[in-house]
Length: 388
Image (cartoon, rainbow, N blue to C red; front, top):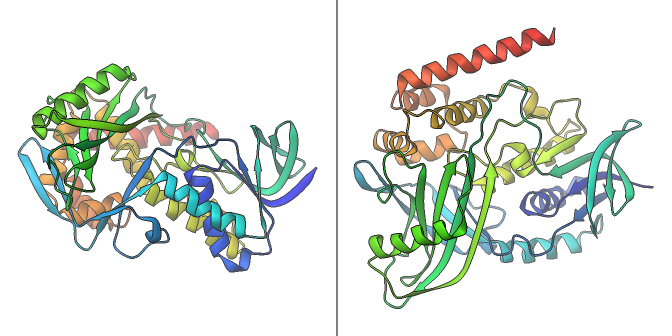
């Protein structure tokens, strides 16, 4: 049975990101790291988008930058000046190739392909089963879906999407502006929206995202995307070079505590937000936080033992969009009509002050928002009382 300082169980975006951040933390170069890859080419047709103010760790492989975004809601289309931010896109194949070179070149990192079984604690150490063989570590960092939080409200919502990589015969897109959210083509109570990422006047990624209790069949997505291309871009002559789809259950995840030695990554670390996706940026911040904690000799779940108000806001958002009286279109229309674009991005980046957040909340459905906050706090108090 081989022992490592750290095991990263899963070599997707989150696992590879953590491995790269550990490699960049030079003082961790003496630690033995095992990266277990149980998938191959599974995510290579994906792309990740995020906003940043400063140069990032992966700028070398960014496929495209946008300085402007658009939002289309109840009051029509808005062009959003997002300075000092830039919106960036990274293609998964470039990310995988780039991180593979870095990880392969690191002498303290071992890559192993195999079927990942369960992760568990055994005799004071964490363990992972790979192809029937046990490996132990001081900490295991695991991708995947963790259990539901004990005080969570039951949710059956699923965030699903389908993307088309399209190429048109005639120019149809503005390569200088990406569409962050477009609700124009949906009804008030439709919980779906479109976004468009153009990287030339004839090539773009066009996506339909839906938050609903069930995952529609692929024919529905294709029909909706066909209609959107025809109505939004007045385009019927185009080819779909590739497509991608996926879904993520939306619920309040159980957070790691200071007692845990199995730490969740990616969606398991709350990095897929119901309020807008954009997991890549949060995965990088979480990976950087873990690396810094390990450098400082701290537990890598240190942040989770403090009250996370942004996780609390996300749980309130989930409750709001489940209400019949609150529509996704109306909620985001209020948000973008009544707040500066840079402030919204700052809020979604978890970098606003409490005062800025209070001002944002007053622009939303105040009564529904206050009611759901009260219910959430009441549930937390009740759950805490039962534990004593």
